[in-house]
Image 1 (cartoon, rainbow, N blue to C red):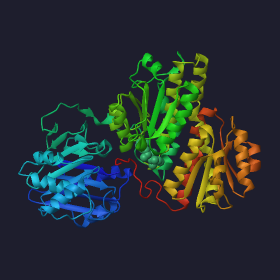
Image 2 (tube, rainbow, N blue to C red):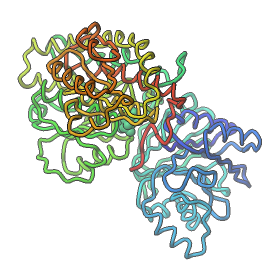
Image 3 (spheres, rainbow, N blue to C red):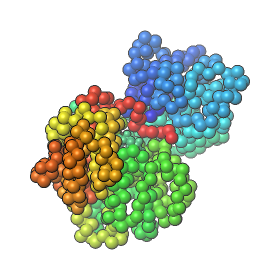
Image 4 (cartoon, protein in one colour):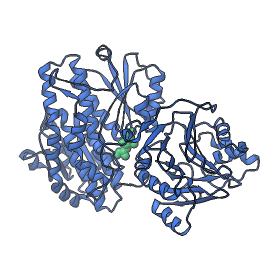
Length: 610
Ligand code: M6R
């Protein structure tokens, strides 16, 4: 979603700001802008559309100065237009601001400002902040920011500059991340440390309600009353993913990330599986064996793909650890008040660690006194820092908007946690060891599953014209059916529905005709015969069937129109292996539809607003 980059130092700011924004492009945005300062003037440049538009504009109208702030915007209030792009200026054009988050009481504030004669130039919620800060500004920007923010309800990560204070950037956060970077050439501010890689050596994360001031050679972080606070400064390397954030030889990040899965799965398991006691170990769970035993219920909460991984987690925890689990959309859970007793642990799953709904659900659970845990990919993200304990995926940066490797790593980590919980309960050492052996074989199984790519290409070519696709699976593979359908719709814009295979008789089967293919997840396992019957029901109604099935399964190929083969793995690990052809299928169909796979329309990588 929105991104912020600021710089003050001894180099021209605009190339640094543009490069920083480029690194945040993957988060999703629809306009971009920057403002630089040269003593007596602010130079504002902003454009709807991709960063390339802004770069072109800057080519014709350079923004000079060694001090500036910049932004990529994902529209919330007001369309994606030049006018609504950030930065926003006050009426005198001497204060400029960029903002991530949502000002919830903007309508009331705007009304008050307009009644006092202020003229607005955009439809955004953000602009009220520029005018409010201007109202309180008497030569001290940090004080004006503090006074303005005291009136605001909502979430913000902001960066502000004033013409009269050259070289100064003021930042503040509440519910939207901000990080200060310290480098040889100057001082930086960003919403994500990835924007600062190669520029800053050290970083400092702001906590909620903190305000920072940056100058060319110095920085300071203060609380909401502007009293200095002590903070920890860390090497930036600790916060960047351990994977390569470039595409390499791959045409898209998504394809690269699909192919990285044997490695990302190995990374998720590295050093965590112990043959000695046939269990898993985690550095950051922060729970004693006794506390672990006392967990008698887990609520998993997440959004999107992470929610689907949590649904797999429900099957895993219940089967391997006999611990009851409920899975809740974070956006719903945060406003519900379900009865939960003290021993219920809340587990948040998130790739980015910044999803606003998941963060809010985690905070609400903490407020209620529950132990909170997180499974997270982005190191030092808000959720990783706020949960009582957690497990990192170590999948490396996931840049493609469609989540792929995070899903399989989440399922892998959930399997290890289920093993760990199970071993404190009923799982014998032999059963624990069997799970370890199965897990260790998974990277190779995924490598083999990737060999289905040619089959996928043929299937994609045959069905790319479909306007509706059904995804059907049962038990462990029902959440994978949901995930497969999400992948297809988000990057190809083809309507797709995931269902438990038997449930389609209760309504969705009405959609079936010769133009509506059904993708069946049907590897060998306990419910194989049942799924085969569901497949026959679709065939009987003239619906084309694509089967994801165990390699060489003749029974399946006798019924299905097309078969994509995958290697056999134990049932509880099938979600990992069956996800691979579904990711590839969505990718190839999206390409055939001419879609921008890494930056699908309307979507953001990290959804930091409600
Ligand atoms: O970063 P998170 O895992 O919290 O993100 C949750 C969803 O926004 C995310 O999974 C989204 O659904 C992806 N675009 C799916 O591919």
